[in-house]
Amino acid sequence: MINTPSVPKPGESTTLWLIKLLTGPILLVVALIHMAVNHYIGSIGGLLSHAEVVAYYQSWYIPVMEAIFLTTVIAHALIGVRGIILDLKPAPALLRILDWIFVVVGVGFVIYGMWLLAAVAALG
Amino acid sequence: MNTNPNIFTRILSWFDPRGKTLGTYGFMLNRITALGLTLYLFLHLIVLGTLAQGPDAYDNFLKLIENPILKFGELLVVAAVFLHGLNGIRIGLNSFGIAVPRQREFFIGVVVLSLIAIAFFGWRMYFA
Image 1: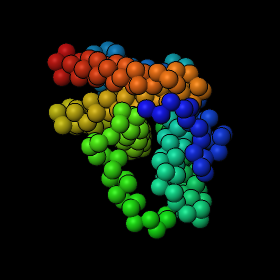
Image 2: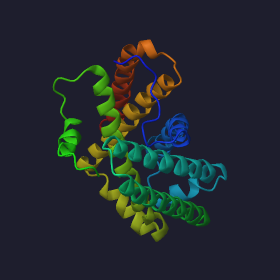
Image 3: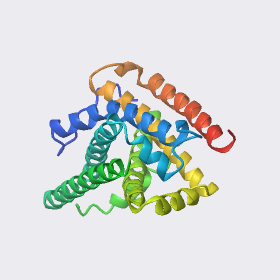
Image 4: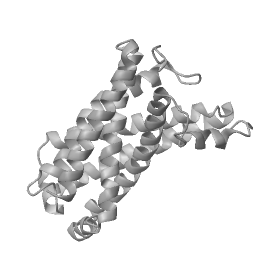
């Protein structure tokens, strides 16, 4: 293995690189809680019905935690995919178009996810 | 995209395990799990829209994912979360200059810990 610290790649700003890096540990913790509760801990091995999911979302801190998860996971994923694309050395014009697509997809899914969280919480 | 004719060969080489160093395996693992998890993330968000459609829509969807093939897909997601998450912690620490000379041992530890977690979750999903 190369024994040198990794750094932002060409075309990746330090800010985006830091966001990707710092959201990682937050995501690992929140993703494990999310997976454990939704799939393994609930009443009988997870949240196994619509009613159980709605009941789970009635505590104020659950939608807050899921909103943090939603925002950080979307930012981390799209910055990460952009990093993979940078490895393929795209032309600057194409990268600008892709950047706009990432912004639109990211903002769109965050808005959709927030709406879904609010809609599920309101069903209780 | 640039006109380098080797671009697809380079992408395909990420999936070719032959003649690679341990560091390259770590790189491949992070890339492949990242792409898989991103695809899953957006599909997961779209499918969760059934929650807003009411109990029938969501509960019917839950019945569908009892299928053993889809359950195996879920185990792949769990595996990707552990491998990408723990390997990501290694890369993150390395980026801040922590444990740089110990990357090899750190990577082996990441794989061993992930395999233990995957085995546990696999047992829990199929046999518990």
